[in-house]
Length: 217
Image (cartoon, rainbow, N blue to C red; front, side):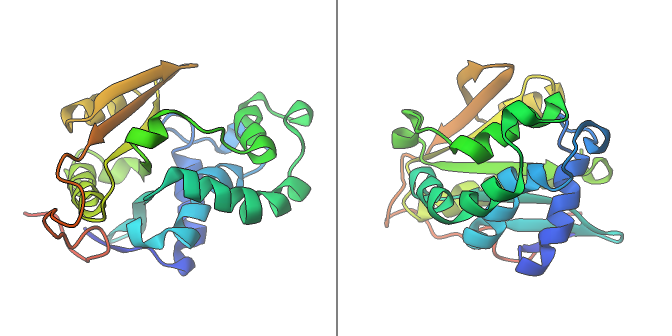
């Protein structure tokens, strides 16, 4: 198993993984009327616009997971509002016209964007991490999280946040074990985060997730 930088050619694989993990870590294929919708909200724009913070995990069977994110959530959401959402608003129905209840949340994000949150000031970076079951429990998630934390700190970010469904207790436990603290709870989800006290030019440099590598044996 190894990791490498995300590339535009990975988008179809990211879409598939996002779908296969989109129901609180489980396969969402039978719950959505739009197979690419989850990735259009939670994966593809990060891979295309913030690739320097993106990593894919590969094993003998191919791409099996990813870590994607952005350095500055406010700037990222301005870009999505200006360039990413307009064509998707023409492609996807309004949330009130959703065929499946599962699609209402992501369709609402497509339609209205992501409203600013106070935590963006203190924890401006954010991440999405999805691994297929076959590569979970092998330490790769922890390694990727450690590396991107070092990369973001070296890039001057004061902190990061991420959201995880309360219906995914394995992920909740993983982020707690990884040293992230609970910042908020809302609508069946947790927001975890961490601060980087040494953020800025003085922070130790890191190869970050852009470097290729493998977990230690």
